[in-house]
Length: 294
Ligand code: AMP
Image (cartoon, rainbow, N blue to C red; front, top):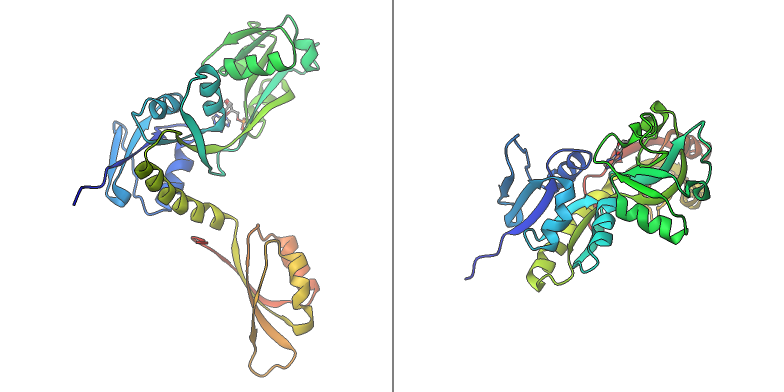
């Protein structure tokens, strides 16, 4: 019997993506505990090798077949494919974490208020290709200053008039007196692979994506159990998003009340509970779901 090839997965070693990547993979039964100087973690689970590298290097690693697949920010992937038009990469799954946006921002007291005002100005960024593409589409000619960190300081130290950087909560912009003018792209963590990957790699990747997806789908889903009047069961659909066919069970000793078990695919918040109670639901239990397999 031929031995199964090891699947090589590139992950960010440290930074905004690494925690989410490790958390998701560990919920899929990988036991990844990277030590400081560990660049390779060999896992028996699914016969997988994890390459722990800088996120900027991940698209190039996958493209050049040094890794089979990788987890990167969509923004980093787009920057890479714009810079390397002959690339062989594709997004194989969106992973619903590390959500952020790439935005243009300027000082709150700046004369730059719109994209058109950027004409003739200098914009600092770590994403020159994405910015160049955006400016070209908007027919605005501006100078791009490439910086690899602390981009938000550029207007303060007067080396740029505006910035183009990733924004998550907006705290960094606020702390530096900057105001967001335009969102260039929305981003989240994605799993990338090669378009020309072999059937074996595609199949192995599909197995991994199936596991990842079952954890992602379970993240916001809840298993809800409650008691309610028979006549009000149909009203549950309006209150619980994603609740398709609830299980309705007879309650011993009660003719008009039933027990309902249902999976809700969206978050269950306190206002949802209040709405459930307003239609007479009682004994409400909300349970987390670990994995959801279709
Ligand atoms: P925030 O203050 O939450 O808006 O975060 C902005 C800072 O975090 C900037 O320095 C960004 O470059 C960085 N950042 C935010 N989200 C991400 C992300 N998903 N990936 C990488 N860097 C990010």
